[in-house]
Structures are given as structure tokens and as C-alpha cells.
Length: 93
Image (cartoon, rainbow, N blue to C red; front, side):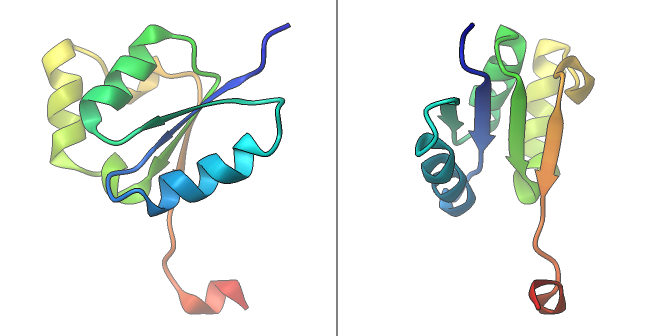
């Protein structure tokens, strides 16, 4: 049985590198990093991702929407999409 593939997507990289480093410590996961919309669309279309973690800024970007439209795909093509967002300091208390 192969390790579940987790795709971590983020433009600036802080979210991507932090989550990827954390997951890489556990050898049960195959972690793939992407830093742009085209890479994210390619990862989704490859169909090998079990989970795709997308930074909320990237998920809402026009660049991602344009890349999806260009290939005729939509986020529902992916099996699992999780959006991470940090909104309020009070949520960390």
C-alpha cells in the first residue's frame, strides 16, 4: 500500500513549507509542494493526490480560477480540498 499523497499549495511559501515540513516528519505521507496555480491544477488533474491543502489566498486567486478555466477543470475534480485561513488572533487563545 502506497503512502497517501498530500499536495500543499501556497504562493509565498510560509504555509507550504511549514505544513510540508511537519508532514515530512511522518514517513506515512508522500508530500508534494506546488507554488503556483498551474502546478496545483496539474497535481489535481494527475489524480494521485489524496488530499490537497490550499492556502486561502491562493484558493481565492484569479490566477487559480484562470488556470482551472484554461484546462476546463474545476475544484470539484479533486477528491478533497481543504482551505486554511487565519482570521483572528482571538482564535489562537
